Image (cartoon, rainbow over all chains, first blue to last red; front, side, top):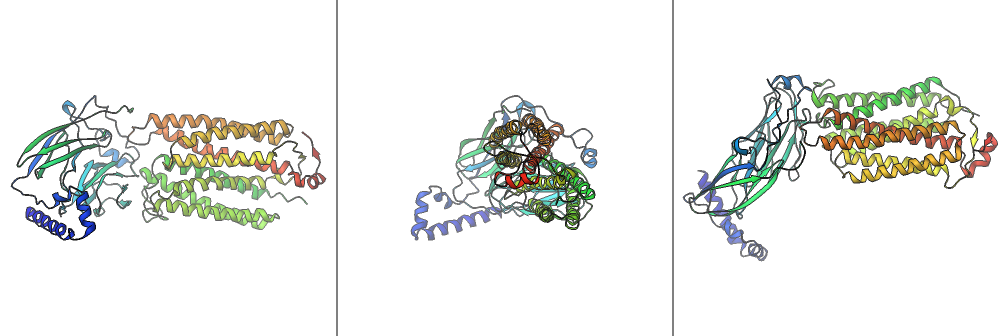
Length: 263
Length: 305
């Protein structure tokens, strides 16, 4: 079903390009952008490939910092041992979790349908779960409060509409949408200042967030050459060019350099 | 004719000054604890006067309650001034204080509702300094000392002590605004550091002028020593606040030491500005301006330094 939608969208895009070729300005923009020709290329589900791999921290992991939740007894009571800051989560062999890996370039002007299923951002134990949310523009983020305390949710975007809403315990989920691509939007709870999260909003579905073992997988990519970028909230970005052929499953790895900032 | 001293009015002005100082501490605690947006609505807090006092809400709602109290005290102050004061300009100053506190409340509300944008946090912090200076001035104007006859001093130097003291107050105010700009992430640190150097210059210059020209005037000497002492402490606190910020950059949440140092630095900044205002007002009280010196000298005994 999804593939048919994609094929339909690609067809519409092709038609639009064909019609646009009659107009001077559209014609000029098509000449300026070599990627525009890619928009005419529908994605053939029989040839799509995938990119998988791992992200590692190339250096010693910083010491995990304990969070002091004494400001709210309910938060403190939710953890048998003090929770630690999820900013840097390093596993065995330097595997780095919470890294967003995504296609930065190479998709041309293809457009993609927005998933109807929402992504979830839960406030649980006075922490955001997941710490990193990746979603498509126009997709709904379902903000839950599983805690018996009040939170406020405050995304601070540069390219989308900013909002700040409260969510008392037992309140209905907040359902919000970010209309434009933005990598990334910091999210804060000012009631509990240790609560921080990031939401990455894409105009395509080719992204992943690394698991605790540092692994990621991006599937359904049409053959082509792509710039794949890895983003981490502390260690910044790194990217590489990857070419995948028909049905090819490519494996790549990223290595992020630790900063010199103090802990 | 000398204005009448109203001890009740003066004592109330001191209470208002103390309450405003507490309000400055409460406001600084909100910023240092990153709690400004913990209550998304305004003027109520979570649609109520009694929200759950946890985490950042405790700081933000306490700030609102203290602010409302100061607002009410300001209205009472203005009424006391209007009903008791013979000096018309002080009556209007009381009304001006009401206007300032209302505007300050509105700026606080806009800071919350517009999510810290459009410079409202800096404007809110800056107007707080002006309001504090205003209530300190009311306390001084209503004091027994101010309404009692005082020996006047003649200013023999150039530029006039009024000009120097006014420049000093203006530079300190600008520095407080720059500090608020840095604190609210609107500007980098270097303008505030340059401001500290400028303040050191004007405070020193003011001290030199006061010492050389009015060493015998005990009130000016006390005010000069107070200004220098508070500025010295503030300068050290500034270094401490910067160190604490740098040392806790990677902390997952505001750290107690950083909160304490930055809050103290903020409120001592307000005290420094208040000292500068007091020095300025004392200069106007004790040293006739040159154009009016002949008239003033006929009203009181002019004493050469």
